[in-house]
Image 1 (cartoon, one colour):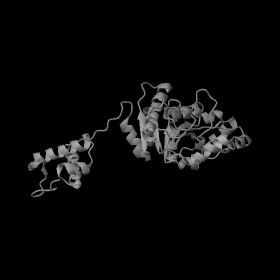
Image 2 (cartoon, one colour; image 1 turned 90 degrees about the vertical axis):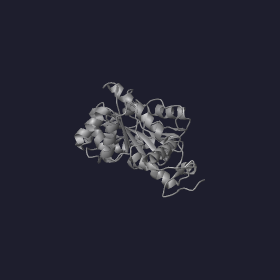
Image 3 (tube, one colour; image 1 turned 180 degrees about the vertical axis):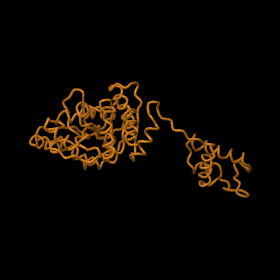
Image 4 (cartoon, helix red, strand yellow; image 1 turned 90 degrees about the horizontal axis):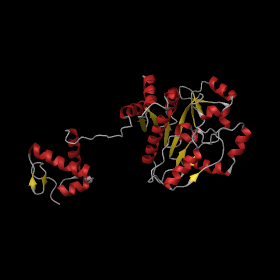
Length: 330
């Protein structure tokens, strides 16, 4: 390898001494091509061109600063970059995807959000991860995972709901493991028990105990966000009129894996708390990556409350819902 520098700080490349701004531009262009198009490391480029890796780094920095190299972020047409960035900044989110549905029907919104959520999970989840999936209508639109999906374990983190228009959490877990080939952890129990006696019985079932032991190992969760109202939360619809009234009086507006929140994101205590079969608040908060999934602008207040609560640090939602959240926040 030739000496890194020749003369008064002028680099030599291929036996020729480069001088002048045009020569510098050519050198920056060559370094940038090797780095960005040929995926060479700084050390490899330095060895090939007779530079130090620090000189390579400075040339790359200058190439970007002068506009010789321009980096563009190309997102799919159905992802709204500006809204995603605004929500991410406003609520301190690690991940945010705002989808563009072909129309405003609930089916289109759900499908669009579900496909985006599946794509995000594909990017985030590796074989070493443990993925948790909840039961909720918001996740019905999850697409069939690609054949290259991770072989990670997939864990059911809430009980099932009996409605035909709600997400079959057990089928969701099977779908991810069927494609990825990892182990599935399932349990047979309702999301909401009618009384504490039933809850005690279900919570002692071996399948649930096995899943519960894995709640502390979860690294990624996909969870739906419900609003406390008819047609907007499967837990609301499974609750009795007495339970609904108590929650309304406590000013509940949102429901996340059976946890109720007020408009400021504070936990609302109700008799339902002792009758949910699934992950606890403490266990959920300990998961490093918690992706909320929501669609329908009627959930604006619920999603804002959930964002404020810190229960999630990432979200996938439709444009109308995203715009409504930002408007109400200004």
